[in-house]
Image 1 (cartoon, helix red, strand yellow):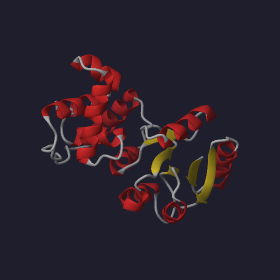
Image 2 (cartoon, rainbow, N blue to C red):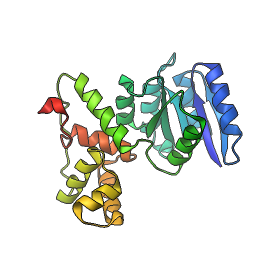
Image 3 (cartoon, rainbow, N blue to C red):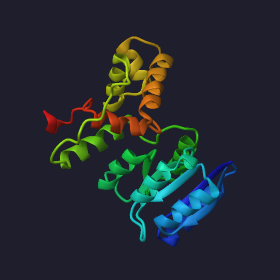
Image 4 (cartoon, helix red, strand yellow):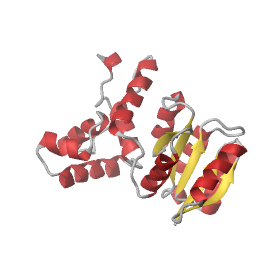
Length: 221
């Protein structure tokens, strides 16, 4: 059973999501929260598998709530999916940076919401390669200067190469074809890079690739 926490300040939105999720035989809504502070408390209390987190909430916004949950070692298995009105919300990139596993627009089709919850619960990042690249490029286009690069000293040359390809929006299968290795080998390199950099999932690894300068958006030349 996949345990879900709903965090949104609109009761009608929570009710709609709850009705859809609770109707599934493998999903259970274990708690709701109307603000970010309550979301953190409920996550600590119920230890859900997935949190559906609205970005804009009172008391504590979804970004800070995501940051606090992701930073708590006791909640390391909790996966957070950001709910946003626009698919290129300016806060989405930062939410991914601090530990969210992906995002969904609020008007997504029910089948896509259910697929997303199940995917994240299974450990997958809820970001297609194309959306990942578009999101980062959009964020970069609004930035005035690059962030200070993060250190990649712990990675091998191959792991850096693979990380750059992940950041460029390639799937494991695409990486395998480009490097003439098996998909399993490509996946192993990705996993090792995630472990060494303490990335919660592939989505955060993409953000790290951008921050390290391995992904070069147009404004960097």
